[in-house]
Amino acid sequence: MPQVILYQPEIPPNTGNVARTCAATGTELHLVEPLGFSIDDRQLKRAGLDYWPLVPLSRHADWTALQHERAARGGRLIALSSHGAIPYNSFQFEADDWLLFGRETEGLPPSVRDQAQACLTIPMVRSSRAVPHGVRSLNLSVAVGIVLFESLRQLNLLTGAEPLS
Image (cartoon, rainbow, N blue to C red; front, side, top):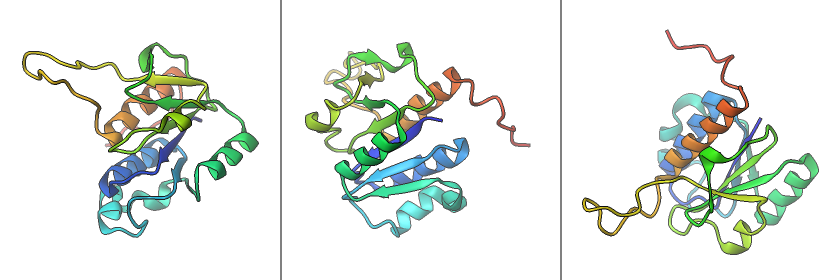
């Protein structure tokens, strides 16, 4: 099962929304510190609703600690970035991939991004008449949802999900 890594997230509601997505898919969530908020933050809890107990959550003191755990468990590190060259929807995901997402304000530092086996991007209109200066990126929780669900779709891991009644 793919895993989601948030590298030094800064905005509590984004992390809460990602946690809810992870709860809905049974996906492990890794938070790399320092965080831009307290894990007890009211907005974080509110965005994750009452799903926090359903989130397989791991916190890592820093990037090195996360890398040690990933090395011990195996799997590819797949970065998501506006600097990526490969569209996420043309990439072949594997079950043990670690999907790495950066800070809301700065994305992934090049030194972290360069450690990934692949760097993907979400194709979008960068500029148009309606948006002449372009869109730099999507909201973090939206980006996680798009890429995570595509990986689960490719791996046929959504078939056991029960529809809500």
